Length: 81
Image (cartoon, rainbow, N blue to C red; front, top):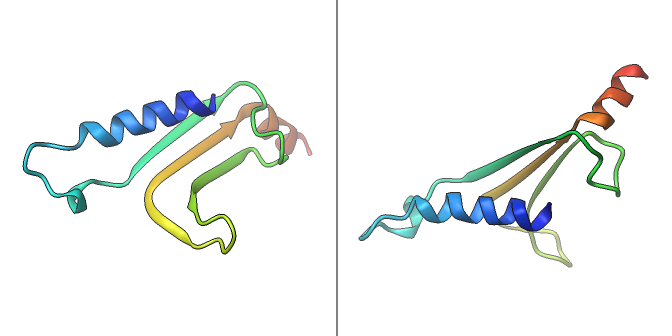
């Protein structure tokens, strides 16, 4: 799922580029994955957002990439609670 999501994000981002276009003109690209299974094992949250951050100090490289996972089974658990 990770690689599939990154592939689709990269494809959407790259398809924006036109000949002669400046890199600053590329728009922020967001993927939203609505899943009928649990995927992000590290959290019980049903909505997870991923971006590009520096590993040790946590500052953001760019806001051009954003990946969302909405996990319906976790949402149902939260709703029942």
